[in-house]
Image (cartoon, rainbow, N blue to C red; front, side, top):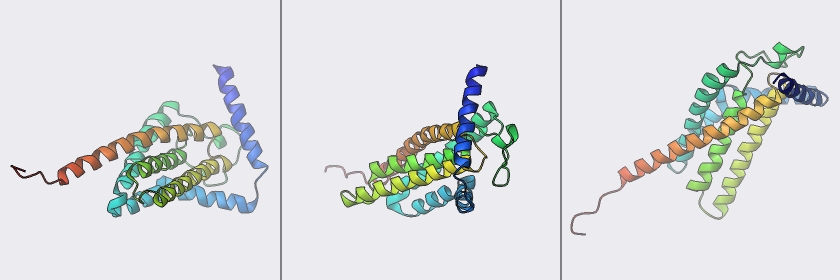
Length: 206
């Protein structure tokens, strides 16, 4: 077991070393801005709120909101407590490039919430087609691709800034996918329930 843990840390540190060779002041500033956009899931909360405003995208907004709640429960309250992994700048002589965050390292909460929302968007946009068919589906694909790109950059920024390991963000992405599946199922069930309530029953004799 010790050999496996040592191998994991060796991989994690080799990725940190590889990324450190790419550091420049401009890239470091960009990564700080990106990572702060994901603080507390802020950018995804704003997106979920915006989607909830419009009727056609309300199901997508609900899926994002539920996915974020599941992320909070699974990652912050369960996995981080169970694993209790020290962050890179605590376990090793690695200086964080942002104010040191608190809490355990595994899994990455920023990554989990980002991929949860990216997956939730992909699931719901394909199913509900709020932009319509044809060109609308192409728009949905572009939105989903953009969400995954942003999620990936946020995940990269956590390793880049020395506050997470590679395995933290990989686990965060995986747990985010699980939370997205749960959040989407719950959101779609609620959408169907409210849709059924809104239907007018046929009059007798018709």
